[in-house]
Amino acid sequence: MASAFVNILLIFFLVFMGYYLCYKRWFDSYIGEAFSLLVLNLALPVSMFVSIIESFTKEELIQLLHQIWLPLISIVVTFGVSILYSRLFKISRNRQGVFQNMFTFSNTIFLGLPITLAVFGEEAIPLVLLYYLCNTLLFWTIGVWLMARDNPLFRENKAEFNLLVALKKIFSPALNSFILGIVFVLFKVPTPSFLLSLLKYIAPLTTPLSMFFMGILVYETGIKNLKLTKEVVHVLIGRYVISPLIVVGLSFIFPSSHLMFQVCILQAAMPVPNTVPILVGTYSIDKEYSATCLSYSILFYLMYIPILLKFLLQL
Picture (cartoon, rainbow, N blue to C red):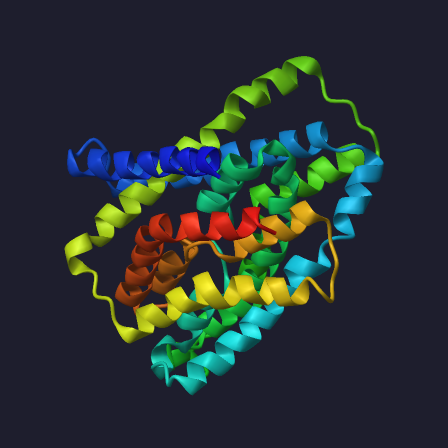
């Protein structure tokens, strides 16, 4: 546990470095956007492709895909709980979709992938990608639609949900690389050694750029502007208590490998996705609330992760 926590501290040190360099004006929101684009469109897709083709044989990959039920059903159930929870605790009508998304979905890439790598090593990366597949599919369909409904214009049928845009987001470069890696493994397509060497130079950029981006995001939100309201606390309860407990409960119904079980719990207890505040701005709804929830979920995570690690390593 000690070594895993030290690795996580090193990752968060990169977040703090990103925050500090933003404070020193080395970084700004434009550089943060560039980092985000580099991760999502280059480093992460390359990392996914390399992980798949180097980590699995055809038989092992087929076995991996059989374990999709635990992450998929756990996210669906958490979504259902978030809807009931938002009504039970009377979350503001214009925040319910955003609340349900932040309650349900995890930051599987910018934080989830590096932290899982630090805790479980490279063998866990494909399992993270499987969780990411489910997380992404549900977020960019049901999740985005519910978020759009927070805008009064949508409820008055003056704004429409664009299915084509959602499909483009689902089949992102990262997911396309995941699928391409599966195809290469299943059909035993050889990868030229020079190309694989090039990809291995690019893939390690994922973690540092992701962490710098998170630090910039927290700085741009402004710690002094953060307000810990009841609606923020409810999101933290969903992320760090209810979501991982749902995985534990469903593991008795949908058995999986021990490592898959541990990875699912770790992924289910990640901070709020950084894409939520971006989309909130797109749909002209409460951006301050989503940015506050994201920032608090990152800040609280450093105190929460030792408890979670102790729990995971006792399973």
